[in-house]
Structure formats: C-alpha cells, structure tokens
Image 1 (cartoon, rainbow, N blue to C red):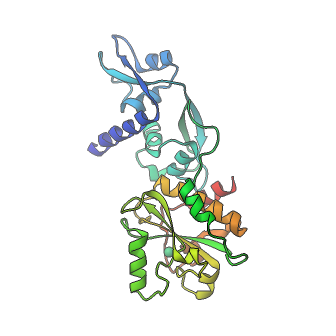
Image 2 (cartoon, protein in one colour):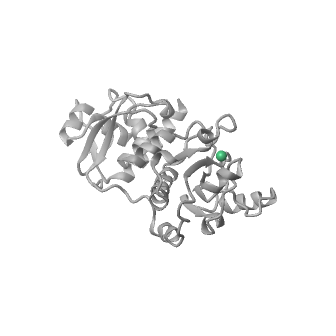
Image 3 (cartoon, rainbow, N blue to C red):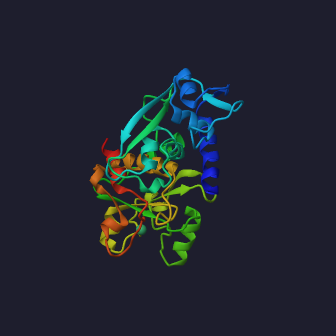
Length: 292
Ligand SMILES: [Zn+2]
C-alpha cells in the first residue's frame, strides 16, 4: 500500500510537468464528476493530476490542480506484443501516467484486447518525435556501412543494471577480445556517465569490423550488435532507451537495406543458448513500430 501511495506522488509530479495547472478549491456539495464536467476534462484526468485513488472521497477546501489547455483522451486497445511503456511512448505520455489513469497496478501484466485511456495534451505535436538527436545523427552520418555486409541487427541486454560502454570495452579487452567491446552500439540507461538513451558507437562500427556478440564468427561477420544497458529479465528498458533503439534501427535499416524482420534478438537468433535480452524486452513491439 505504501508503495502505491509513493507511486501516485511520482505519477502526479510527472503529469504536472506535462501541462501547466490552475487550482480549483472544492466547495460544499461538489463532486469530482461535476468539477470534471465544468472544466471539460475527465474524472480520471483530475485523479491523475492530483493523485486521488478513490474519486468518491473528496473534502471541502481541498485544492485540486486542473490542467490548463485542452486534454483530449483517446481509447486504445492493447495489441499483441505491446507493453505499457511502448504504448506510452507512441502517444508521447509517460507509462506511469497511463498506469495511474487506468488503475493498472502491474504495468507488466497488461493483456491483449485491454482498453486503455490515453490523455493527450493540447500541445502534443502531430508529427512523430525525432528519435535521434542531432549529435548522434552526425556521428552516425560520418560512417558509411559496408554495402552488402550487414544482414541483420541483433539486440542484446548487458544483463547488468549499471554499466557503460567504456567499462564494457575494458572488460571485453580483458577477456581477450582484440577489438574490445563486442557490440557495434551500446544504448545507455543513464546508470553511469552516459545519458539515458545515449547511443555509443564502438570502434567496430567505426571500422565496419565484425562483431563479437554471437557465438559463431560467420554470424558475427554479418550481424550488427546493439546492446542496451540493463537486465531486462528484471525490468523493462527505459522509454528513452526504446526511443533511441527505434531511431537507431530505423537509421541502420535504411543504410543497410534491411527490413523490420531482419531486426532480431540474441535469444530468437540463438535459442536455448541465452535468454538475452530478457523477458521484458518486446521484439514484436519494436518490429511493429519499425513497420509503421
Ligand atoms: Zn546477448
């Protein structure tokens, strides 16, 4: 219970960041439904903004934050392979807000066909957000992929909650890999020096060298390796990691003439050998977004 209360606090704060608020002081005989109607927003939106778990409990004099600007809501049906995080990202809202508004206690347990209410702020951009920042783009643009070399993209997790590419490079060198870091790219979760969602280009990508991330050399010769920092057997990737990964895959697919189905994971590519990148990583969700 304590945890839920703390979570409401957090969700509420993240919504406040989304839009500016005005304040409504609750008067005698007012209900949350009536107040919601007056401002043209839904009860669930007021609940989310104010961390109210039970809409029937309201006291006179309580100050309610009311989002300014239009808050539109859409109803969305969960499709196969989708996580709350992916849906949230697609609509430019936080997964925490969605969990609160829809009273989802276990975000990892949403089911196919479930209807989810999604609040959209009036200021939401109609264009899809740019997934790669300009400095990452210019680094990527400075390297020309060897034509015909790359046949697939294989996604891994580091299986460590805290790590960074420079440290991994040292570890892989110490393991006797002469080119160090086994992957072509590392996407940080912000746990060390790199930003959450920051993409690191390794020497293997810069030199268009074979990877060292899968068992057979023949596979390494043709497979781009992307490692996301984190242990996705324990928790999902961050939404910034997923955006960066989507942007990176889109970019590489274009440059290497690959399809969404050429994007795979370590465990799908080499089953029985590993669970990498973990049960909380949704390849289906990623592929769907790459196709859209
Ligand atoms: Zn792996």
